[in-house]
Image 1 (cartoon, helix red, strand yellow):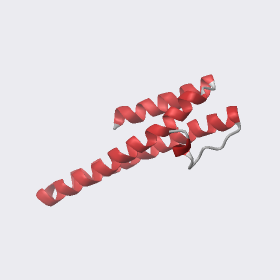
Image 2: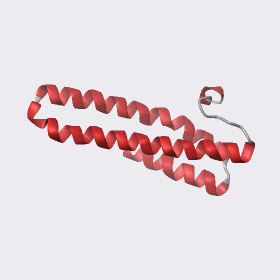
Image 3: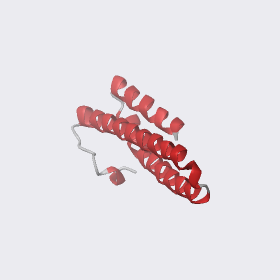
Length: 100
């Protein structure tokens, strides 16, 4: 998950610096991958808590980290969406399936 988020942040900033809408659109599509990781983390944490209640204080931190990483990915997506708007004048928020 961390690598995917790092890739998205790097890519969104590269797309901004180079005004690269192709890269920006690719970054937007990767947001679903990070969302899936976040959902998987919730399931894993829930299973761990059920098996070992003493681990709850520790695994809650994993959930927090996962949520923060997912939010960073959302912000990288926002940057990429803004690049497309700046260069092409096209609003792509909530329309990603049109160019997938």
